Length: 429
Image (cartoon, rainbow, N blue to C red):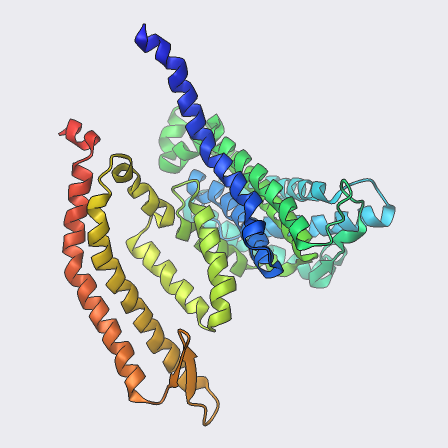
């Protein structure tokens, strides 16, 4: 009787725990403009939200279906151009179509293009599929110079404020655009998460892991890849529509191989094996691109180094690192890791800062104006041609590396003990 009566309460608790992250995310989206009310901060948050939708759509290909694509950006580009064209057409014809609906048109157009391209490209997998996607990028880039009626020679602009007001909102201010993008962000994330839980989403994981076995069980790997490909194209188009609304511009730069490579980097930074991994990658990359780029011209160098370190030492990305700590946090053994983490990561952080200082000073001395010796780094102004700053930076780098390397075995031992003291491991043993 007790077990039977507790089942509804258990199911209710599981439902509440599943809904809690979504509720926290919605509250977070609603309160962010209150915490950071400046226009520059809201612009960064808009860009971050668009990148999240784009990165999650790419993860539907790579993380869920195992399709490495070098041309996913073209669907974002198609969506952006279609959104701008629909925006201008609606305004010219004075049609009663509000601005918040336009990303849907963008997504549907990209869905159509993804269906067309995916009908033949998804018949292949692995390296062949990746090469096909690379060729499609170059093909679309060439078409952008030929098909003037759609691409307009490389870009087309619009004015979002000239359309029909939406419940009195004319989208004159960035805060209004932020909430429009936030609604589409929440809706897109929920739909993409729901897709990953459908039979097609589950089969995409099976095709990613073992396509031969999936075929043996009677599933067509081509159709499973095609469904995932089309869904990813739709949400990439939504991201392109949001980009066009935010910047009031569509440009062929969104079709470039560089944009596709950037979203691949974002997905790997966040972790393609975890649903929320690309969200973390999009947040991190946007912060590096917008904030770090204001402080140094070498921000791309640091992003590249971070990407290489992630691929080499943390192939699961930030999301994988977070998931690695879930068992020790759930069973209360994370406290065993606090001191070893501090003793290892703090010196490592100082070593990274010291190495960054050496790189920045070298860059400044090679590219500064003749006679300019004073440089400002980490809010300190000093003579870059004096040996003392170089010695200090080198000492911090070497000392931090030595301390981190000396304390690394202690961290590894603490990590092993923390995982082997969880109830699950004790039961297995």
